[in-house]
Image (cartoon, rainbow, N blue to C red):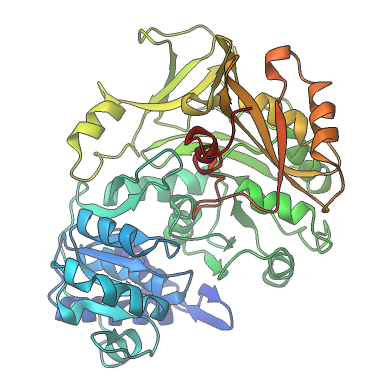
Length: 512
């Protein structure tokens, strides 16, 4: 089950259908397959073999898309690394993944040159810069592929358990871990999400976020499986997003909450321009109810919410269930199972809060070279998510918060999400993030970081008082409000609460 065979099949049986749109470039399946084959043959010529690791340090671009499918065809393993990483972090992940080939943006020529001596597994001829750029010690992607054959590379025998990629966790809760996905797991992404999102070969999928983020594969894989059109943006911009949806008649989009919030607040947002959309799915973090309701009023009957871990457990709230269960993230997908357990590992009744655990056909075989961490995460075949939630009588999941984000104030559990849902109802607030900071009296106390729609729309003190008048209990009152221009975010667009908390717990700020 080689997922690389999907592109070859479409190139043969529907060669003229538009496969990829990126900026001014439109490629049919025949043309895109030819480009992918050239790269696959380059890698084969460089003696990249089945199981070898190919790391990318690229922004959204055709080279990155081509690498994803070229690597699949020859049985190598792609390791997408964030272009936001610095030299030390890059070196650590390249070494951890046993990478032997690097395809990078020209912007990384100097950083890679600085750490080249540390990267002993990477021969000089396998340092490749995308585009036509030339730099000392690097090969040019364009020159290499221009000379290569467009013919299919020699067939590589793939079994279901062969790895296809290593996705490093975003680091929202600590040191990144290499999550291994096999060809079988990605084939499950193809089939399960094609049906879940009601995709068809005629669908048009737009992705504006980073395709290094695993959430991108939720639409990339089914789009390739069906032979749909995949439109890729270099980065998210609300105006460009709206214009592209209208021009290309886009049907399916996957977005993180910060993108949806930005879109809803944009002067270019238009229900008429976005009327072709059949699916708007949020992923990566909870989207607050205030924003869900605003989106659903403007574009009814299109909203999906996906809760999932890159490690391999997924629930989806279907667009037809949103009206009756707007706060839910849905039930497990077909072939998946879910339980809610207490600290002793016992199953809890509907309505009782506990840890979410799950299993299914997308479950990772493990963290790369970390059987110790794998054993902590997967116990008796069940993935322990570290997230807290409960199910209703119908088996629909409701997220409460991450275990690590829960605040214990004076011995009472405080869930930041409950407070955030109140804060975003304030007309001046665009986004909110609540986390615990040290307190001499209570051990921990909530602090609210906010981004406003307009600077100086409200003072921190006035907003604090407004919040504290509306929370359900005294222990949910925020001690202070910090007004920020922007939140620290991962490549996936997730708010990094760990980074927000760090100065307070490191003692660099005075305890409140």
